[in-house]
Image (cartoon, rainbow, N blue to C red; front, side, top):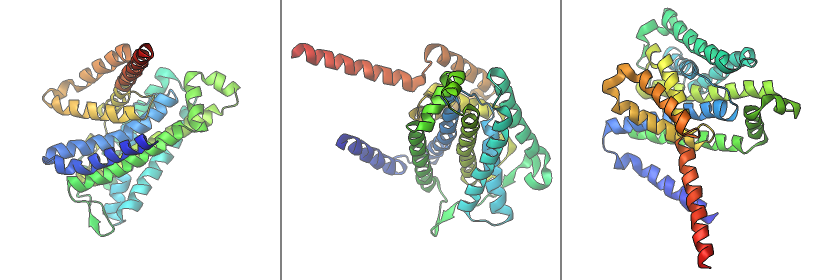
Length: 321
């Protein structure tokens, strides 16, 4: 127990020092993006890793959160946090509205439905010009401000993102250890057997969609004030594929895989910026290789190596004794 608290203290000290160790604003921007993408991937892991439902429309839920928050701040001059809360709530409503009719769908039919949802949201943003300003998007979104402090630079935004990711990780860990988390895993393994054991499968499937939408809506609500822009080009099918890649590469059956996947794919995306036209091809190859060679993702590989090393250490100690 003492060692766990020391580890948490070391992580907290390290995170507090990051903005002072990273002097480049560009690198701080990338780190903040990793935090926002971690939120989306956490929700996607609960949906796909725990419940076994695949979504390729998370950018749609993110867009709902981003535009709701931005419109309330720009048009009604609402404060930051109530606008964020409204964005998250509307994303949850959309998650419920989508999850209820989609709860009977499986496999490729569910995937196609999620793709359709993301495209519908994007087309609404493009064509509802009087409200969304169409393809031009919303600009000049105010920076967050609370307790008299304006989050006007990358350093301050880092602390805000870290706080939200910490809350998101704690909530996901609490859910995974709860009765609901175990029911979601049972649905992933065999939904017929889970229903026979008394698990309300359809209710939990819809709830998983709502939870994943809440995470994506929160990331979207933070994205607008972070970049001061909300445009349909930021919430495309390509982005949804990228979020799915983050979930699979990091390992979608655990909470920490979200952080690993978001970090790895965000950094890789920046390194491959000269090859942007081939982004979907590269992501497709990464997905195939990960599914074939690392079915539990990078996190699963690392955890397996650690368990093997511990067993080897115990064996060596046993032989010495």
